[in-house]
Length: 284
Ligand code: PAF
Image (cartoon, rainbow, N blue to C red; front, side, top):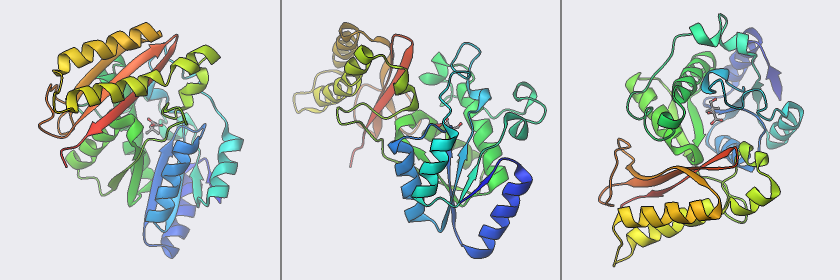
């Protein structure tokens, strides 16, 4: 496995890969890899002839008060895991390699509406940072396909829209959310949870499931009442709910019925840790 932290060396490795293989998959990450990331890597290995992974804690997607400085960085362990998985090339750029003049003055990509809803409301500018770094990484790496997890479903929908609007020559694939045995969606931020918060955390997934059951049954409850009970259960368990909403997958529009493909999205805080999760509800 080759590792490059500068673009010049990365391009040498990519040129050599391109000489040997037809289809290159890319899995962008911020490191601190868990089994959810490794499942995306395995999906990439099954789908393409070579796999490139990036490890970059992207400063432009963090607000000033967020956890950029404390975000877990475990480069050695990540490289060991990627090497065992069979990854071909890892890109570990510095911030100045990605944003030579600084992130604050770099051209930004904004996906209106999709990027302003849900987490976009609670974290203004977050998705601009995500789109900007992914666009930049796509330009540097020129992958044939890229894989993103469904755990960050809003991010996935926004990036699909960016690729479509800008006619970027890359196929986007999604990978299923990986969960701990008790249902908690795997996330690098789970390690911020105290022992008692960790015990409560799976309630988020259980509550989402309960809410979807309540609105899907033949004697379905109206969404507003199921939403109210779900928020109440989460608050009683110790969460502060940022949002719990049913949105269409096509435009992230608010809905209260299941007449088109949609997803129940939630973000809720336990202490200082913000957890997100979702359930997709497809018509067929
Ligand atoms: O989902 C993440 O880990 C990040 O948002 C991503 C897509 C790697 C961009 O920094």
